[in-house]
Image (tube, rainbow, N blue to C red; front, side, top):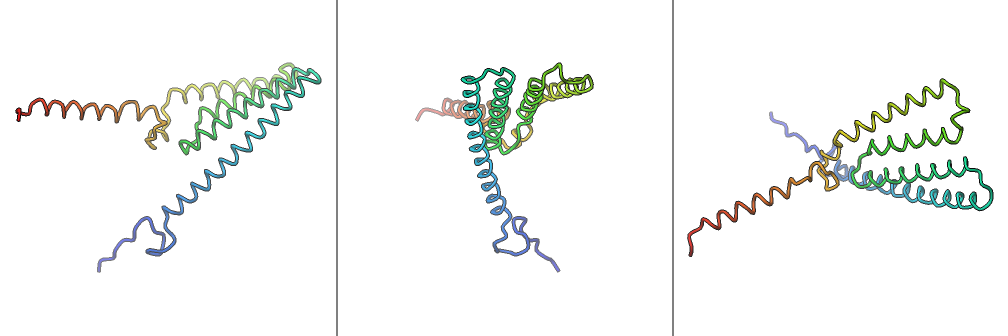
Length: 184
């Protein structure tokens, strides 16, 4: 007796409402909506922080706090960029996340002051920054695997001339064939 295999796109019921592709498509759309709301909230927080910097500059001049707020705005900008990359490619850019982490660590050093941090904490921060710097170098040298597998137009590795070269080869081939045709 031969049993038919069910389609992989269905869970348990054939021709029912449990279509896996439709569920995944709807969940991705909902996830994109969540990321868009996060982007809007992040943008609002950036505006509030910029207003706070403006107020700080007009009233009292505490350079440490103003610098900390400016670095915090830069962190928010990088997080915003990370979310934009996620919306475009549907993957997290590790290099951008490492950059955000480096700026966050340096912000904490600026806020607390390098002289107020103990020797063990300074060594730990230096070790963390060295590791993050190494990871940043690796990310810069390694192609983004999700980008390559997704084959999107945002991936410079896949679209470095793949389709354009194919079109050029087809054009040359058709021109050669046209030249070799006998005159009619």
